Image 1 (cartoon, rainbow, N blue to C red):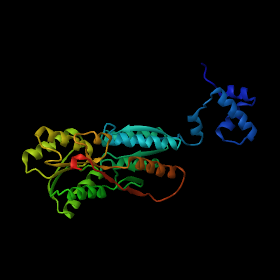
Image 2 (cartoon, rainbow, N blue to C red):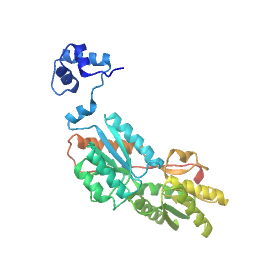
Image 3 (cartoon, helix red, strand yellow):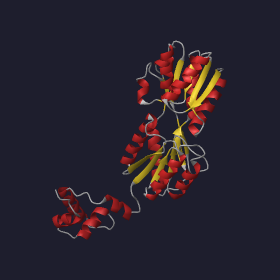
Image 4 (cartoon, one colour):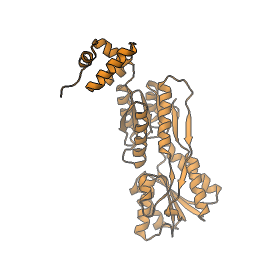
Length: 332
């Protein structure tokens, strides 16, 4: 079937192509009767028009770039999905990029998005300091919002979860379960979220009289969780609980406990962070901090839309309230 053109619409509506363009783009006013006549003809013929050209005439592309450290991590997969939905409701499309936790690749992705003339950028920086120059440059070119993680020294909005409050919930839950000692398994201290979670664990454990038997730093992966748990179980003494900085690490810890014949929660309690969909399906189901992904995404898009709408306001930092989803890994 031949593609419907603006000339076809003009013939059907019995007006000029210039009138069709004005009526559909809203660039110049036409009478209500003519506008309705053109819209009816366009609908009857199934004419979609050239949305990109129209957007460029308005100095907008109606696209937003998003850069995340990993699209294989279920937390970021879910966050991207919610951002895409929120953008769709705002009439914008998403360009997704993965930095693969590499600040150099992240800088390339940011340059590419700026060159593509996206309207704005949503980013979860790969590194707390090495990402700063590229994020700063991008923020000087375009409206930019940081999510989950952030770098300092950049004039931009940020929205994420309150990591300190989240670890407070975990520590209080474990204390109520009678836990007197706990180990923490996390990624290396290369980003703001990790740093805040380690600091929050130490602070709240001290507040509640829970002895910290060790802090094990590696990466956000199942393999690292398994390796760290094997080490702490082998070296002993075994803590009452193992607190993990994300759910992937916790899944690895659960696997290592099963392989070693250590019962969860009979011998040791295990907690995660993020509440990814698989957390309810692990063996046993995982107690974990629930991140309000939908709300984080909606707020990020709202903050970006505020700037795109020429609303002038000082950059904001929005730490949303977490909750704790209690499942069998800490005993119900």
